[in-house]
Image 1 (tube, protein in one colour):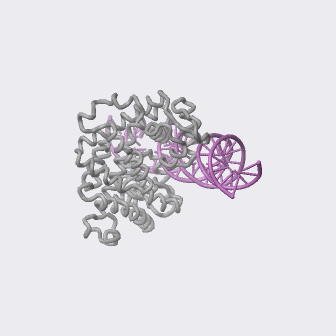
Image 2 (image 1 turned 30 degrees about the vertical axis):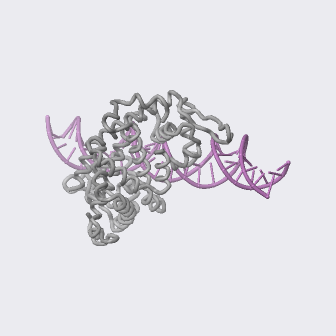
Image 3 (image 1 turned 45 degrees about the vertical axis):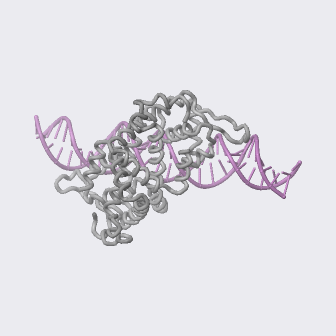
Length: 167
Length: 167
DNA sequence: TTGGAATGTCAACAAGGCTGACATAAACTG
DNA sequence: CAGTTTATGTCAGCCTTGTTGACATTCCAA
């Protein structure tokens, strides 16, 4: 660690069992782990000329079939223009269908087609396989802690969105 | 969950205490938590016309002062062209200096300037503050599990890079 | 019925990944 | 010493995915 930092941390963390070094390790663990987390789906997507953005859209449409563009927007945290580009290609390629809302015709309700479901399953299977291996290696107690820390790391609105999906 | 999936999972996970639903929750937790993880530095960086790529370079140079371009490359997992673009701006802005190697004059050793250290500290403080809050909320046992699962999720070479930084 | 709010689409731009080609300098090897 | 490999930097061009701005449609409330 470069000199001139260890003494000036905010709030004397050594008294609270949390040194800057421990925190830094957690930060780096998140960085490296996230790479692993996305690696397998990324490989599959690259063959299909899709990206992570497509995966995210497919995942959450699969999770909540019939969700609206606006709802998806708030979950994904991107602009509607960004999401729209992704949705356009997915709809164009026949992986997603968009139905005009019956009550409110401004809304579009999104569903995966059979083909969309197939890709979703392929991507999910790859990602779940890694997750399953990690869970098994770490053990059930570790998994509890893992989720607990991740939840605490979320912004309040994301924690809400996350909890909502658990229903 | 859309029909046609729950029965066909790979390997009857219910017998192994890991249902697809549990795994999916972990996947979503990673997604939402990573957003929180990067949110605070992102806000700071946006004001300075820098991005996450700059943050990553600054972080690992701060972590291993004098590291070479090649070493940084393997840690970050990007192409040299991509990294070079970022380093060029950081060097141009006086946040990083590049010294020709003494033993091997082909190598460039990278260091943060005082100004670079200042930005690093600002970014780190923000990120550590969130990490510290999450750790405190979740408790020390949860933190153990958190790290354990993240390590198990990394690719082998990333786990090596991660371990190497812990020395 | 008219104006504002909500929803979604299209266009254009920027950041930051990527590949490929190539230059330079230093180190290594036979 | 000649030739090869290694480390780095650079240019050009492409793609994905973020952004803002402009605009059309629909709904709703004054």
